Length: 259
Image 1 (cartoon, one colour):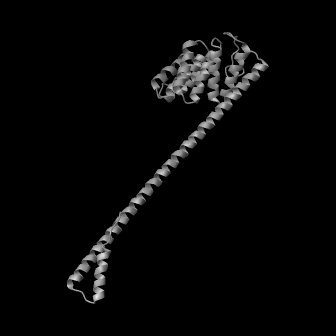
Image 2 (cartoon, rainbow, N blue to C red; image 1 turned 45 degrees about the vertical axis):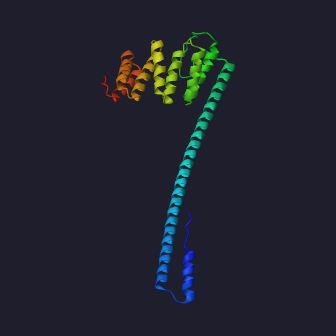
Image 3 (cartoon, helix red, strand yellow; image 1 turned 30 degrees about the vertical axis):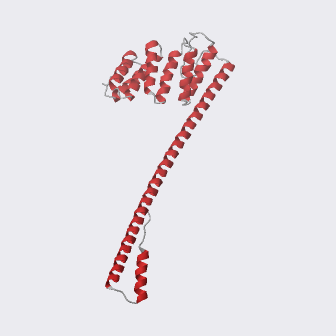
């Protein structure tokens, strides 16, 4: 903004007054008028400068706030990327260890007795080489026992796909459900448990899977279905550890105590 001062006229009046040594009242009034106008314009200029200064400060403050928010967002995104990379690195390491375990067990051979959590000694029900199935199943069990639940889930699913007719498929599906519970995918765990109780109702894993259904429904807040499943465990397998666990869980959600 450009402000023009009537400095020329004021200077002329002042020169006339001081050069002649006398001034009329009209000259003095004109001089006063010019001085007041100049003062008013100076005040206006000061006000305009102050306004522009406040506007500049507001702009700087907003820009600083935006930069702070952007920096925080970038830092958060970088932290998220680092966490994702750490999880990816862990998963790759788990898969590599699982494959190495499978390879070692295949090279060493093996018998049908399971050394992992399954504890079965059944013959092969499906096709394929027995040592392959043993190695793959045991590697997945090992991952689960070491707390590597993502690798365990993939290992059991690979076993199920490779040996769909094997006697341990029901147990593998149960472990898929257990792994998904640990990974906080409760809906997926329900699907895995349901496969066991529907397709292998007479398998030993059926009672584990039924208990898993009850506990998972409880964790999801579906107490009605949880009571149904837990009651089934108690009524169907009354003298088992699963029944005792079901009774404990049932009491915790308001079920009637049993003798």
